[in-house]
Structure formats: C-alpha cells, structure tokens
Amino acid sequence: AYGIVWKAVDRRTGEIVAVKKIFDAFRNRTDAQRTFREIMFLQEFGEHPNIIKLLDVIRAQNNKDIYLVFESMETDLHAVIKKGNLLKDIHKCYILYQLLKATKFIHSGNVIHRDQKPSNILLDADCFVKLCDFGLARSLCQMNEDQGNPALTEYVATRWYRAPEILLSSRSYTKGVDMWSIGCILGELLLGKPLFPGTSTVNQIEQILRVIPAPSPEDILAMQSDYRASVINRMSFRQRVTFEEILPSSTPLPALDLLKKLLVFNPDKRLTAEEALQHPYVKRFHCPAREPSLDYDVILPLADDIQLSVAEYRNKLYEVL
View 1 (cartoon, rainbow, N blue to C red):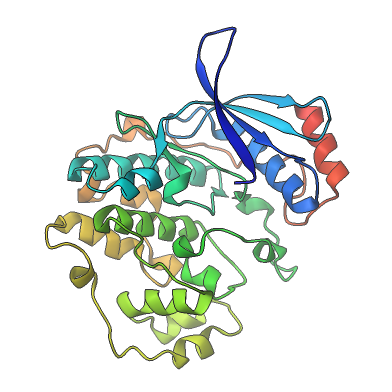
View 2: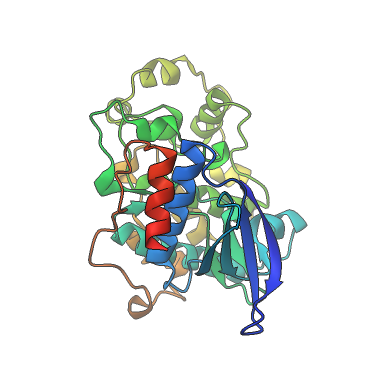
C-alpha cells in the first residue's frame, strides 16, 4: 500500500519470506500512525492461523525506513478472482469460512480491521487464507465518539467495500463495517467481479440501495449522520434489481442467503462473525474448537483516537521493538 514488497530468503533458516519496505515510515502523522498500528496489531493477532504472521521488524540504517518481514504467501484473492474461473464453489466457501474465523478473532479483542478487501486476503496453493494489512485497524475501546470523531476523517479504505454508515459519514461505527466488507467479498467471489463498483461516494450509495432492501425510517435514523436522510431520499430507484438477478443462476442458495444477511443497511441487523460461522453456507467447515477468540481487549500502547506527533509514534515503536 505505502511500501514495496519483495520475496526474500532468510539466510539463517532458509525460509522464504516477504519483506515489506515502508519508505520514510514516519514522514507524516498519518503514515506514522498507520505503521505503528500495523506493527502493534500484527504482534497481537499474528498467532492466529488465518492472520499474516509478522516475523521481524528491522529499522533501516537511515532511521527513516522500516522493513517488515512476513511469512510468504503465493497470491491474493484479488489476483485470483481477476484470473477468472479458478475457484470452485467449495474453494469460495472455504475462503469465506477462514475470513470469518480471522474476523471473529479480531472482533473478540474489540478491534475492527476496517479495510477488508480481496487484495488484503492472501492465499496459497492450498487455498489457505491469511488476512493482512492492519494499518487502518482500530481498537473500539479507544474510539472516542465525542470529539466529532476524528476516526472518520482519516478513513481511506477502498470505496467498493465500504459500509453505508461510512459512506454517509455516520458518527459512530461498529464491527458491522467489517461484516459489510465480508459481504462484498462474498458477492465478488460469487459474481467474479466487484459487486458494487461505485465511481464516487454518492454513486456507491446508489449502487448499494438499488439492490439491498430499502432501509426503514428507523434504520436511517440509527445512522447518526447529518445528511443521511437527504442523500437517501433524493435517490430514486426506478430500476431496482435483486441479488438473484445480478448473480449467476448457479449460485448456491445458502451463499445467497448469507450474502443477504451480511449486506443489510442497518449495521445492528447484520450477522456478526460468530453468527456467520454458524450459517449453513459454511457448515461443512464450521468447528467451534478451531475458531478461537480472545478474552481480553486489545489496546494500543498510545492514545489512538487522536493523531499524535511523528516523534511519539517513532519513539514508542522503537521502544517496543
């Protein structure tokens, strides 16, 4: 995203690794915060089999660049979908199951990833999934809602996977933003291309509302967004379409059912990761004993609801490395 990735060999172990060089990691507050979050959250979550493992963090001699050493993965879901027709139904189901498992784990620590999309889902030849890129992740315990929520101003995740509440600049958000993204990813797996490829924020909202059931007045109120109603009311939906019309006729019914339960306008009515793991679509893989969760909140060692100075991020990071 903001660096370059090489495939390398660890001379000590002979292991093939991926090295991500983050150029001038502390050049400004946003990059410094992102680097800090990425490293801190990965150190916390990396033991989960479906989350990328950060093996090492190396400071460059110029004291500006940072090298992150990860286990190596062959490809990502974006590349696989783009090649077309590589995945059978069973593969799609297995990928989604693993993504739900990783998300359940993160959410159990009260953290939201906020940037789930196909290019952040790494894959190997056995269709094994590792979720990566925690640079936008947030600890829900550290989100301060009364400050006009700066959490939202630095939100840069890819538009096509953004939940309606983010598109409408809602003042509060929940684990539901990740569940929406997972719904978009499932839709893309089933369709073979992005489900809602919006060209602007307003077009994104239009594309979504053309397909999902119309939000009730209560749903719109629950958004806590200043211009939600005006945006939604202005939209006319003359050519509504259903998921059934968009997706191939061969789409398994359980997949369609899960999709409809994830892509719900009101975040409180979306399935949680835990609920989705019990859905018939992923039933053949579901095994509670292999779906761990954390019993504590993951909190970063620096206030995360405000941007601190570059020096504070650099010093704290060097201190913990």
